[in-house]
Image 1: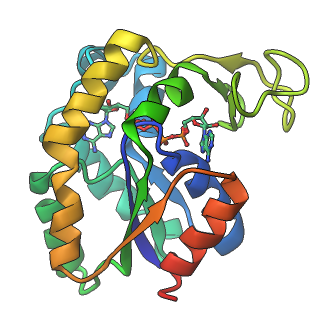
Image 2 (image 1 turned 180 degrees about the vertical axis):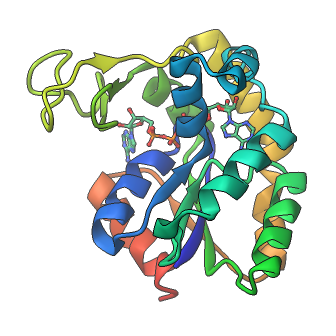
Length: 215
Ligand code: AP5
């Protein structure tokens, strides 16, 4: 299974990807997570990416493509993967096609998780993430049992730097201008499935799995 998860910031891509990992035993490749790790570690790449991320802008394609090419070479990708937050524009989608072509493989599906714009702000301003295991919570919709502490691993919960209202608005604009056109890109290839990303996380997951399995 080689999937692309599409959707606006806050649509629930990461939430669904984590459940897909558990069910299918394939890795999630989140360019956002890889970039944030580089920022946290203060690597040269992280230093370059930080300004773009905090401004709600896309990080330059050459930086992201280098990361993805390296990641796809790892052994755990042999069984497949879930691409979360990549590709983010047409140039990245075309570059991904070339990488896969050169390996003699192709994507098995692209799933668009659709959530009305009006719901996204609360999802993003309310999001809290575990520093230890990456589990996501939301102060409005799915709180941790003990405030600020992860139910799963006891790690501390933090708020992402780019989950501030002003930055979120810019991320949503960037999504509409650059990423939303990929819905048409994958529709034209005949591999797009669109599902509603509102309602219970498990109900959405059932739809995601059906789409991933081509049902
Ligand atoms: P990235 O990390 O990819 O962020 P994003 O696309 O903005 O998506 P999010 O992670 O914010 O949302 P999500 O859809 O995963 O939602 P989640 O599951 O967390 O990118 C960040 C930045 O990195 C970019 O702005 C850019 O600068 C850079 N970048 C990354 N990739 C790049 C690329 N390829 N090219 C260039 N630049 C790149 O859910 C959100 C919240 O909602 C959570 O609190 C969750 O608990 C809650 N929630 C989930 N589902 C539901 C539900 N059904 N009902 C209620 N609440 C829900």
